[in-house]
Length: 449
Ligand code: TTP
Ligand code: MG
Ligand code: MG
Image 1 (tube, rainbow, N blue to C red):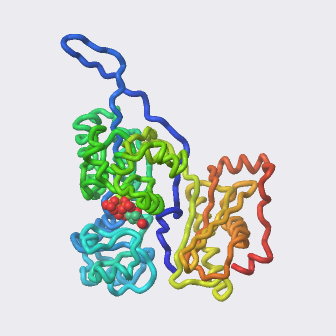
Image 2: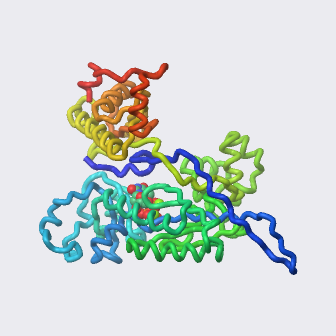
Image 3: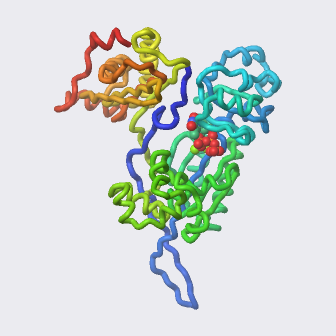
């Protein structure tokens, strides 16, 4: 069984909750021809997006510096602290393990995917989400290392602490990226934000040994695009009047929020670049994409986005999922599936308990052999965080999905999270009207999985 990173949509997905708007703007005083204008003029918004370079791989290179410059991919399973290689070199520094001892991509068999690849490996056309065996055909000599989420989380915390020490308005956007409001930070306006971005890159490198790329722009939408312009170790500054030169030539897909489906629809309508999108009348977009999505597409194409930098966030759901080594059948592989299902529930429960949350909405996700995906969920009257209750509710969800076809992936998710302290208070209040009872063991599902 592979522990998939499940990165794209589910795994440990920490979505944002409460909004906290950036603080008061500073007062700018300007002197023109001897006349002092002391009116309160807000400084122009300068929003940075910071994204670590080849994050998981770069963290691995800190402990295996002998692999620097070589093609390296991360994926295929979790790092076991007692694996054969580490045992053979027990007592010696990790940096002393000879390069020739590391596993190569060409020797991998299985269905794991790449979480990330170093820039040296990307030159061979391989990258995130590609199957490891396919990648092995493109770059057989790449070194393959397993994932070590605990270590990546540790470095994630470290670099965010550095950012916060320099600029207090930071929005956490996942393990390796953040938005930062530079507007009112001393020096944040200098060179459009370049000076502060450079200082930040240096401070992060000093504290962690890792490199990052930063884009600074009038808003989050443009900053996110800008941070990719000069990766790795890049700094890109976008001003409002750069839209035509820097943003419009890009493919629509570069807009964060336009995924493969929207891209295909846009292409079918003859829209390839952001310039093509900007050229369509707003009313036309509304007609083809609906009121809200159409309006958003129009605003995005014109580089407009007034979303604030959200400084406090609460996870709204936590999940775990796994892709099987071979497709499994609900009946023929009942025992194996049942064990995986229970393990996933236990993992989510452990995640919840470690982070101090409980949740009322329990969901499952299945991906069938034909890659179609099904999800179901159930909302309980009270939040739960224990594996047995999650397992029971998830089992009820399973009853509601077709199980004739083989499965390649199974996931369990707990949503509608509340802090466990708040959950205790809810428990004391008793059940809410209109929600389901805490499930009892189900004679059909319990033996099925
Ligand atoms: P990214 O920031 O998308 O990628 P990256 O940091 O590896 O490389 P880049 O220099 O282009 O920013 O993702 C951050 C980490 O998230 C990445 O190191 C591994 C993980 N990840 C996955 O596990 N699966 C994925 O499909 C992607 C895109 C990332
Ligand atoms: Mg990154
Ligand atoms: Mg990222």
